[in-house]
Image (spheres, rainbow, N blue to C red):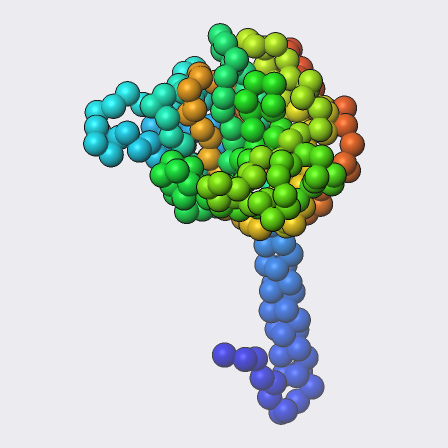
Length: 275
């Protein structure tokens, strides 16, 4: 009920005015306290799940007819492991947009194939296996290539970095889906950790490997979606998978902070874990 002042005398008006000021002061204090507890800084969180793979789901076609098939993705000592086979994808339950994904990965004993998919949507959209997305390639010797999967993306010097006539550049079966990276020599030897940073903002996708800018895409046909990790034939370990919301891209140049620090702590630290 609103406070009203009786017109009987100056005293009652003074008391009423004091009450109004006190109420306003309390409301202001409450608002100030709420604002004080509202987070302002973007919070980085680790997407490495628990042993139950909470927050993720596996899409492995061979499991459709064999539900007891060996898992394609497991957690070992806090490290996410893509076993390589049975082939399929581990997909986040939550979609994301406008973020930096900081990854540390390695092929454990031999070179091979894997990838991180951004803006993933429709499952099994290509070859009854790959979800609609843009793949950021981790294939040994080709880390940072884009593969278009029922989506598309552009880069500078497209004619030098994509096969075929421009009319074939797309993401569907039979089209020229691969966009070459800019270095092909940024990876560490098999068994050593690599650091890949992927930034997605609007229709831009920018990728660094071990501090080198390896791809810089624009006019992407998707701007949000789930993340997916592949099982594509070769075991791969992921000891870091940190996601931070962003409002601007890091300048398109080599990142001095994109190198592996072998003495760094690799637990969750102050990063919150995906629940």
